[in-house]
Image (cartoon, rainbow, N blue to C red; front, side, top):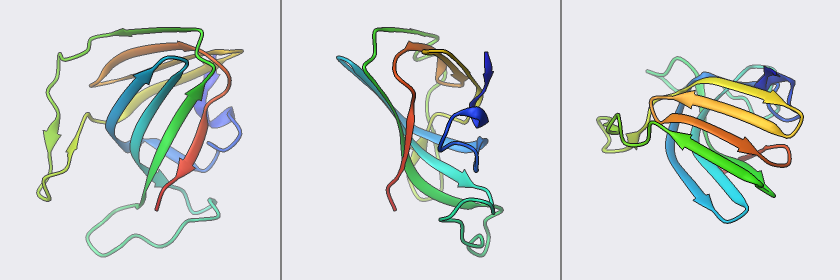
Length: 124
C-alpha cells in the first residue's frame, strides 16, 4: 500500500496535522469531516491566520461505493474540545492506499475500507 499523497486530489494536503471532526458511516458511503491543512502548493491555499501555524480549511473526505468496512478501536478515546467548543478526534496518523483498499488510523481507531477512490471536498 502507498501513502495517501499518491491519491489524486490529496497531493497538497497534510493530514498528519489536520483534525478529524467526525466520521459518518452509511450504507455504501463513509465520510470523514475534517479541518485539513492545505500546503502552499494547493490552489486554495492562503497564508495562515494570525495565531495559526497552517492554512486550515473545512473539508470532507468521502469514500463511495463502499463494499466493506471495518472499524476497530471506536470509543477508546473521547473527543477533545478546543477553546471554541469544537470537538475533534485527533489527526489521521496513517492513511495508506492500495487498489480499492484504504486504511486510516488515529485516535478514532483503525478504519479499513474497500471502496472506490476517496475524494476530498473543501467546504469553506
